[in-house]
Length: 249
Image 1 (tube, rainbow, N blue to C red):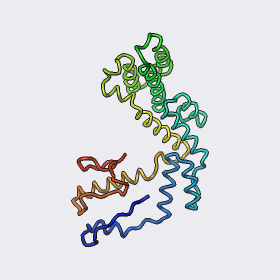
Image 2 (image 1 turned 90 degrees about the horizontal axis):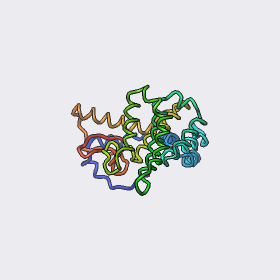
Image 3 (image 1 turned 135 degrees about the horizontal axis):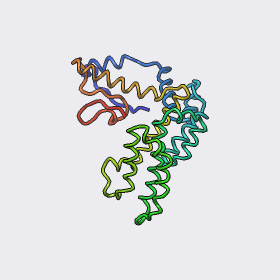
Image 4 (image 1 turned 45 degrees about the vertical axis):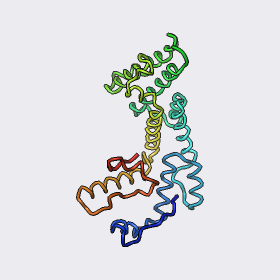
């Protein structure tokens, strides 16, 4: 989608901008990037509709996309056990061959158990901690000795049971931030795609990073460029930081 804007006279525009206007990507390439994004990020209905309108054949069937969407939605909703079961139904090798991902899911499941305890009204009873402690003992404790990172992550997570919510450090508060669900969901999505022989992320994300890298190198070489080069994605607030450094989210 684009909005109509009034371009400055050609004589006042930077030579680089005029040169960019002369480069016209093909409609086929644009359609390919859009379809790749819809499939990779998990938008089956949009992918199906776009494929019909653009008269192209998607590289993945909508059913396989929907399976990833269901898993992602379960994780983002905090329903980790159903998500793990769906992953194993889809391909049990995913978690068997990726202990880091498996541990991340189990730790998130423990965090969700703890969230239920600390968010309940009134001070928790001693018995309220039992499900979280039993889960940590059975699922996470045996894995912790296999990696220093696992040990550290488990210790930090268990600290949520010790300190009241108002006394949590920023690092511990981050564990209860719903953003962690999104991070884990993204890792799961990438692992599923990899297991299916697909790219782990949408091509457009790699293109944006490549474009940021190219601009950085050009500026380091002191080539003549405009003070700011827009990506053409709205106001580009997700691209340029307050100090002008290139960013990609």
